[in-house]
Image (tube, rainbow, N blue to C red; front, side):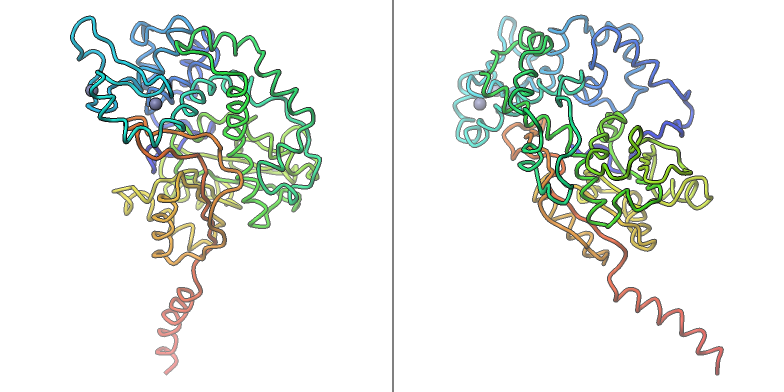
Length: 432
Ligand SMILES: [Zn+2]
Ligand SMILES: [Zn+2]
């Protein structure tokens, strides 16, 4: 789920080696011209590792065969369509047979009544949440088309008074009206006439719109929360560079610069109305108060060595790793370990987000073993309220983006002391 943990993504200033600087843009504009929002949906849903794969697949759109909205939604659903019990795929069924779908959740498939019956004792624990997940993964399209979230307004309360989603929603003027408007958009109609599933009730759709708003804004608000926790609010009068480390492509390439505009509304006093958040440049001059975000396709410690050490990129005020996945990384020593040690030893305020409590506990254990100085840990008040299912195994605990936080700065004092003692001993020998 966290993708390649060491695979960092996308700085527009640093094209990946061996490819033209705008290759991804070119490949995508062709698709976008046909179906808005499609390219990003494909990337995520079909688990394409990078834009090059998509580019190859695009040579002749026939490999995808997507020409209509109906095709697009069917294709997305295909990646979830297999028997939840015996895992058989539709193409392995005898001619004329198709998979059955659970009527309650519209999310889980079976090859036969027998498989459904024998799976029920497990599936019933997840069926309700899987129903919400199935609605949300279709509704996600409306995030990519820009229909969700609704038009956002400046915050009416200081960010310190907004402790979580309840307070955030309370701040939105005419909220019910705005949610209702999303329900009535043309694309909402398109979605449910082509989804191949019954349209949920208005009540269910409104609840989904709310969840999708939190999903779309979880990243910027989590980032803003981290800025506050680390005492780095943009009004401090200097440009703030944030590096996004170790994100899978879903975390950074999917993020359009405007996704982070909510940060500007969160810190309005910084008075840089048109560009509070930007991607790049790697080095910045004033205007002060700007927040610059940089991601990189590669290992973060390599980025540090080649660009930060050499002065080509500014030292970050904060490093964020959305779902780094180092708890599950077999290559911890090559991938994340050098990065975590670097961040610790250079005292860079670092924030990690985790999908679940289990992931949180395992990551916490790793950071504890590395003797970092933890500053904040626990559930994230700005987690996404959307449930996500494990694609290959629907009957499994559902998780949420940015559900938990771990923040650290530097090392525990003991380590400092050890280093001091070591560096002093040669001097004392010289002195005698
Ligand atoms: Zn089966
Ligand atoms: Zn079900």
